[in-house]
Length: 185
Image 1 (tube, rainbow, N blue to C red):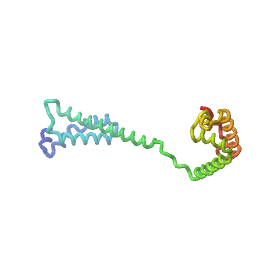
Image 2 (tube, one colour):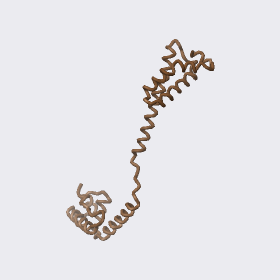
Image 3 (spheres, rainbow, N blue to C red):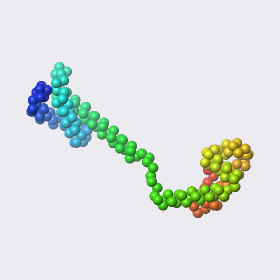
Protein backbone atom coordinates (compact mmCIF):
# COMPACT_ATOMS: atom_id res chain seq x y z
CA UNK A 1 0.00 0.00 0.00
CA UNK A 2 2.81 2.47 0.88
CA UNK A 3 4.71 1.37 -2.20
CA UNK A 4 1.70 2.46 -4.25
CA UNK A 5 1.80 5.88 -2.56
CA UNK A 6 5.54 6.12 -3.29
CA UNK A 7 4.88 5.14 -6.90
CA UNK A 8 2.35 7.98 -7.16
CA UNK A 9 -0.70 5.84 -7.94
CA UNK A 10 -3.76 8.11 -7.93
CA UNK A 11 -5.94 6.31 -5.36
CA UNK A 12 -3.14 4.97 -3.12
CA UNK A 13 -3.13 7.81 -0.56
CA UNK A 14 -6.95 7.69 -0.38
CA UNK A 15 -6.88 3.94 0.28
CA UNK A 16 -4.23 4.43 2.98
CA UNK A 17 -6.36 7.15 4.56
CA UNK A 18 -9.47 4.95 4.43
CA UNK A 19 -7.58 2.22 6.26
CA UNK A 20 -5.75 4.32 8.92
CA UNK A 21 -7.49 7.69 8.97
CA UNK A 22 -9.83 6.90 11.85
CA UNK A 23 -7.01 5.57 14.08
CA UNK A 24 -4.82 8.51 13.13
CA UNK A 25 -7.55 11.04 13.96
CA UNK A 26 -8.32 9.31 17.25
CA UNK A 27 -4.67 9.48 18.28
CA UNK A 28 -4.36 13.12 17.24
CA UNK A 29 -7.61 14.01 19.04
CA UNK A 30 -6.35 12.49 22.30
CA UNK A 31 -3.13 14.50 22.05
CA UNK A 32 -4.61 17.79 20.84
CA UNK A 33 -7.88 17.80 22.74
CA UNK A 34 -9.40 19.73 19.84
CA UNK A 35 -11.10 18.43 16.69
CA UNK A 36 -9.70 21.09 14.37
CA UNK A 37 -6.13 20.62 15.60
CA UNK A 38 -6.51 16.85 15.30
CA UNK A 39 -7.67 17.22 11.69
CA UNK A 40 -4.69 19.46 10.94
CA UNK A 41 -2.29 16.96 12.53
CA UNK A 42 -3.71 14.08 10.49
CA UNK A 43 -3.65 16.12 7.29
CA UNK A 44 -0.02 17.13 7.86
CA UNK A 45 0.94 13.53 8.70
CA UNK A 46 -0.66 12.15 5.53
CA UNK A 47 1.01 14.89 3.54
CA UNK A 48 4.29 13.74 5.09
CA UNK A 49 3.49 10.16 4.08
CA UNK A 50 2.75 11.27 0.51
CA UNK A 51 6.02 13.20 0.30
CA UNK A 52 8.19 10.69 2.14
CA UNK A 53 6.73 7.29 1.30
CA UNK A 54 9.87 6.35 -0.63
CA UNK A 55 12.02 6.85 2.50
CA UNK A 56 10.04 4.33 4.57
CA UNK A 57 12.17 1.33 5.51
CA UNK A 58 10.06 -1.78 6.29
CA UNK A 59 13.06 -3.33 8.05
CA UNK A 60 12.79 -0.68 10.79
CA UNK A 61 9.14 -1.34 11.65
CA UNK A 62 5.58 -1.59 10.46
CA UNK A 63 4.07 0.99 8.17
CA UNK A 64 1.16 1.64 10.55
CA UNK A 65 3.60 2.38 13.39
CA UNK A 66 5.50 4.81 11.17
CA UNK A 67 2.29 6.54 10.12
CA UNK A 68 0.97 6.84 13.67
CA UNK A 69 4.37 8.12 14.83
CA UNK A 70 4.10 10.85 12.18
CA UNK A 71 0.61 11.69 13.43
CA UNK A 72 1.86 11.79 17.02
CA UNK A 73 4.75 14.14 16.17
CA UNK A 74 2.52 16.46 14.13
CA UNK A 75 -0.08 16.58 16.91
CA UNK A 76 2.51 17.38 19.57
CA UNK A 77 4.00 20.09 17.35
CA UNK A 78 0.59 21.66 16.83
CA UNK A 79 -0.19 21.61 20.55
CA UNK A 80 3.15 23.26 21.33
CA UNK A 81 2.58 25.89 18.65
CA UNK A 82 -0.88 26.65 20.01
CA UNK A 83 0.42 26.95 23.57
CA UNK A 84 3.20 29.26 22.41
CA UNK A 85 0.74 31.49 20.57
CA UNK A 86 -1.57 31.60 23.59
CA UNK A 87 1.34 32.51 25.85
CA UNK A 88 2.41 35.33 23.54
CA UNK A 89 -1.16 36.58 23.33
CA UNK A 90 -1.54 36.48 27.11
CA UNK A 91 1.80 38.23 27.55
CA UNK A 92 0.60 41.04 25.30
CA UNK A 93 -2.78 41.22 27.00
CA UNK A 94 -1.25 41.28 30.47
CA UNK A 95 1.60 43.61 29.61
CA UNK A 96 1.81 46.75 31.67
CA UNK A 97 0.69 49.02 28.92
CA UNK A 98 0.11 52.57 30.09
CA UNK A 99 -3.54 53.41 30.55
CA UNK A 100 -4.59 56.68 29.01
CA UNK A 101 -6.02 58.88 31.73
CA UNK A 102 -9.35 60.51 31.11
CA UNK A 103 -9.24 64.12 29.89
CA UNK A 104 -10.64 65.47 33.15
CA UNK A 105 -8.04 63.49 35.12
CA UNK A 106 -5.26 65.03 33.03
CA UNK A 107 -6.71 68.51 33.48
CA UNK A 108 -7.00 68.09 37.25
CA UNK A 109 -3.45 66.76 37.46
CA UNK A 110 -2.22 69.81 35.54
CA UNK A 111 -4.02 72.15 37.94
CA UNK A 112 -2.63 70.31 40.95
CA UNK A 113 0.88 70.37 39.47
CA UNK A 114 0.56 74.11 38.95
CA UNK A 115 -0.61 74.52 42.55
CA UNK A 116 2.37 72.54 43.82
CA UNK A 117 4.78 74.60 41.71
CA UNK A 118 3.26 77.81 43.06
CA UNK A 119 3.38 76.52 46.64
CA UNK A 120 7.01 75.46 46.27
CA UNK A 121 7.86 78.82 44.72
CA UNK A 122 6.35 80.60 47.73
CA UNK A 123 8.63 78.77 50.18
CA UNK A 124 11.77 80.48 51.46
CA UNK A 125 14.82 79.53 49.37
CA UNK A 126 16.47 77.41 52.14
CA UNK A 127 13.30 75.35 52.69
CA UNK A 128 12.74 74.93 48.95
CA UNK A 129 16.36 73.78 48.57
CA UNK A 130 16.13 70.99 51.18
CA UNK A 131 12.82 69.75 49.74
CA UNK A 132 14.16 69.78 46.20
CA UNK A 133 17.24 67.80 47.18
CA UNK A 134 15.27 65.30 49.29
CA UNK A 135 12.22 64.78 47.08
CA UNK A 136 13.44 65.47 43.59
CA UNK A 137 17.11 64.64 44.05
CA UNK A 138 16.45 61.50 46.08
CA UNK A 139 18.96 62.40 48.78
CA UNK A 140 18.58 61.45 52.45
CA UNK A 141 18.50 64.22 55.00
CA UNK A 142 22.07 63.37 56.02
CA UNK A 143 23.18 63.74 52.40
CA UNK A 144 21.26 67.03 52.11
CA UNK A 145 23.08 68.28 55.22
CA UNK A 146 26.41 67.40 53.66
CA UNK A 147 25.53 68.97 50.30
CA UNK A 148 24.22 72.22 51.81
CA UNK A 149 26.86 72.31 54.56
CA UNK A 150 24.11 72.78 57.13
CA UNK A 151 23.72 70.73 60.35
CA UNK A 152 21.38 67.73 60.13
CA UNK A 153 19.05 69.24 62.73
CA UNK A 154 18.67 72.37 60.60
CA UNK A 155 17.84 70.27 57.53
CA UNK A 156 15.20 68.40 59.51
CA UNK A 157 13.64 71.59 60.87
CA UNK A 158 13.62 73.22 57.41
CA UNK A 159 12.00 70.11 55.95
CA UNK A 160 9.38 70.06 58.70
CA UNK A 161 8.63 73.78 58.28
CA UNK A 162 8.44 73.49 54.49
CA UNK A 163 6.04 70.53 54.67
CA UNK A 164 3.87 72.38 57.19
CA UNK A 165 3.65 75.40 54.86
CA UNK A 166 2.87 73.17 51.88
CA UNK A 167 0.17 71.39 53.86
CA UNK A 168 -1.52 74.71 54.63
CA UNK A 169 -1.06 76.11 51.11
CA UNK A 170 -2.29 72.96 49.38
CA UNK A 171 -5.25 72.32 51.66
CA UNK A 172 -8.24 71.59 49.43
CA UNK A 173 -6.20 70.18 46.54
CA UNK A 174 -5.63 66.51 45.87
CA UNK A 175 -2.29 66.77 47.66
CA UNK A 176 -3.70 68.05 50.92
CA UNK A 177 -2.25 64.97 52.61
CA UNK A 178 1.43 65.93 52.06
CA UNK A 179 3.34 63.80 54.52
CA UNK A 180 6.82 63.67 55.95
CA UNK A 181 8.25 61.38 53.27
CA UNK A 182 11.87 61.96 52.43
CA UNK A 183 12.99 61.97 56.04
CA UNK A 184 16.21 60.21 56.99
CA UNK A 185 16.14 56.85 55.26
